[in-house]
Length: 179
DNA sequence: GCCAACGTTGGC
DNA sequence: GCCAACGTTGGC
Image (cartoon, rainbow, N blue to C red; front, top):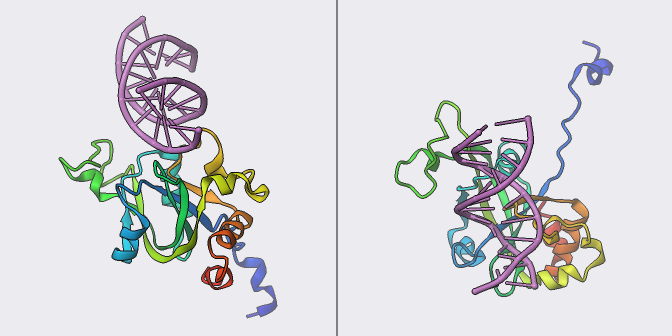
């Protein structure tokens, strides 16, 4: 065995990017307080193919999640969560009568995927949509784009850092250090 | 409540 | 395969 040659025969490290996400949730349906209470939850019911691909292919255990309240007052990133289970078939799609039932999805060939997330922290200060719109570093952020309806979406490392620093004026370093 | 921006559906 | 109609999302 010639160890020096190992690198040449090993597949290149898959690019793990992005490692950060934003999940929208209507607080009337499921809020950051619900997640704090539950500590961990399943993220089922996403019925959009682009989002499905992210759930199935791109989200990995350990990734960071900005928890965003949509259809809320105020609209804001309100906390941080972590992906704790890679994408797996959304079995609710197979439950006849369930609100997420979808005959298109076959257990042999699942149409929809979900992940599990766990609670990490509530923001010290909610990062309102308004404050994000005022922040230059977030000018390109997907959630702020008109018509960006994806309920789960990628966040760049720079955007992640910016939002965490806004939401955790005192312990940003601690939170950043968890990912 | 309004409506823009999508995504999906279905007739052709 | 096109595209009009329709439904949904979600900010405003």
